[in-house]
Length: 279
Length: 279
Image (cartoon, rainbow over all chains, first blue to last red; front, side):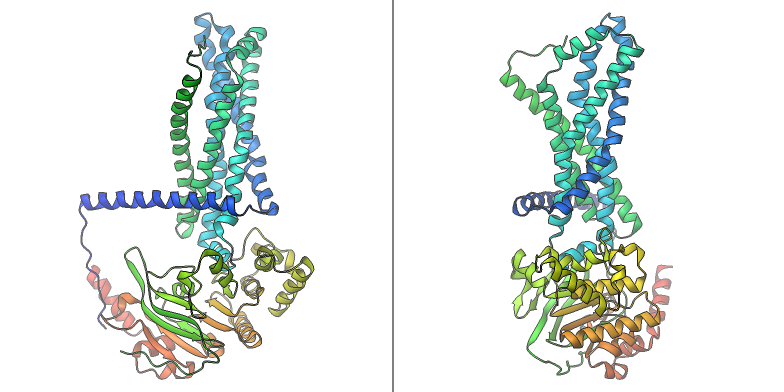
């Protein structure tokens, strides 16, 4: 029997570039649609408690140790690295302000989000990817349940609602770690350390970090769930989905951090025209 | 070559209809202009080589996949015109036994079987417990396994739990995707008997996708054989056979006879030609 064959022509580099751009745009459109559906399901039907609680536990409670350890060490490392420079200038007593402002505005939120992307994001992508490959997501649809409502909304809610708490924990542990190293190991005067910390780190700075974290949490959940939902077949496909979930989430965290930083500063300068001086 | 006419086995009106349905994934056309009626009460077996689109056909019937062209009707209504709520309500009238059962890993056997009725709040908890136990008994499983997770079950038990889950909503149409694949001959026969019992007891319509000619002989009222599009001549219909199971061995088409008798025949010559072409 004659076999119907399709002609295979070699595509040119320009054609391949065009295809790549088309696929990237299609992917972004799909991602936007996925995010829109997730948000619309949040409004239409909230998940049941017995679905929410395990997700809150996995995403929030189980992430606490790793976030706490990371926060502590970052505070400690900041103290060690900044002390020598500040000591040369005779400003060692002001170390607390630099360590703590860096922690609450930048390092706490970004590192908590990075840890969440690494620990939870890849795990969510792998879990949902496995569900896709083993047809469990199709089974949900066949049973009249929307998979986005059942699988994505609880994970999204857990990430968005718990990441501020994880950020606060990273901040707190970083402050403790930085203070312990500065005052106990590097012998910075304790009174001045806390005096300058209080003077230059305000509640608005703390809020700036927490505010950012909501966006980071949303990005991690949406990107990771989207990668999982579109996982390719086999162990390689699921592995790739998990890796992409972390890489894309990390890029999104840095990108959002930059954008929110610009917007925040513009808004701050609009409300408080006098620039705040750290030193 | 024209397909054999469908046998007159209709018990009532046509319940499931595909009209010129085609589907393609990116550039790859899998099904082309499939027109098929499954009358109420009939059990249709869909056979064909791996990759010919049998599972895709099954997923089109419950709109887990959308046709690129043509339409799928259930009880005279185009599934493509239903809104999400209507589609979910319609899906509750279907039961789907997936190839690898697609049990939810994180849930126990009880919760898997209870999933559909519980999500749609169809019964109180006592009635639900009774229904789950009834369905487990119907598929020959005791209540002792109801607290086990899917990972603790054998292949045959998983298939039977999958069948119990599909039956929990008392569906009008049962879709079985390769129900005996990967099972030993005895367990395959157990599943075949369960399918026959289900179809007889519930008087439901059934579509069974399978490679197994024993399953066809045991459960089917009618057989449809699909052929991979890539190996069809231009203009040939994709359905090579549509008729009663008893007559399939006498089909005038050698490709149908070769499939039924498990003879590689022309396929070996095609593979040799392909190899020569590649080298």
